[in-house]
Figure 1 (cartoon, helix red, strand yellow):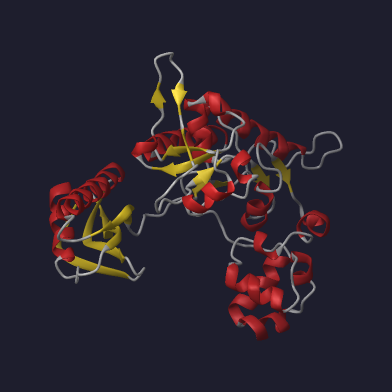
Figure 2 (cartoon, rainbow, N blue to C red):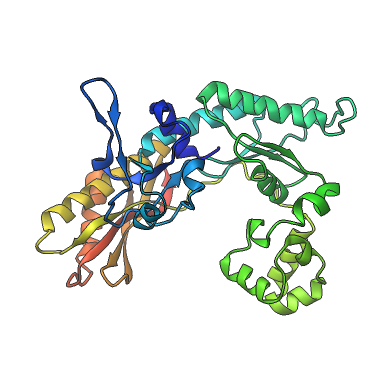
Length: 366
């Protein structure tokens, strides 16, 4: 899905279409309805706090704003950008709608999170057919049908990458965003994949990219020109082999159409550091809210948890976790809150807190 959270918000606030919009604010950034029926929106100008950009419209990205960036830094880059609060319930609703729309056309799906899926088109009628002089015309038509189905169901655009495997499809899906459709075959590697930066390969992170650049390898094509043995000498046997295969567009991973979550968690970063004693009431309220949210997630997805944990980040950015194993699985908000409270008692709270999280692990199906 294209700029998913921001696109959902633009459905709610169509007057913001084409404008720089950043999602990541708190409740205080909720738009205010004016007497004339118009809305007054908060902007990033003068923002002070520890919020983080969840996503941004493409107009905001043109200013250098991106997901994961601190809102104060984003404010320096795009002070007049509109700032909206995060509404995960709404995003989950549209996520379910978009996935149902995909399934109507192509039911073999691997769920990759709230805004992305892998789809196997291989056995669908017409997928292997040529259309005119286009050898990939059949699969291109199916991909277009998926895009149309998603737009009808959600009013939103998506970008699709079609290729022989998951690795190339991931890259292809980002080549022509937004509202793009890219079909990549093995023959397209030299012209469309090899000129790209190595970071465009999903699985090459910042550290590996820095090491590749230090070795003079900036593009996928330069990586593809390396011998496999040489890559294994520098990156280890397993990762070196994977780098070689990825650069040549090789990926044998099948679709994973069903997998249970390992854990569920919720966390929040405070606008100001909180003290365990002086801000006890506020901290207790936040812990209760987080525990309730995790319990709601568990119940909605049909799971219970045998291990409840908390995550704390202090004013000096040190992070600690504490877990509690339970004799029986729970999914009840009150029981989860009690277990989280017991974890909290095992932490030295002499330092101020900047983040608090609650996690449910060791999940079992109800």
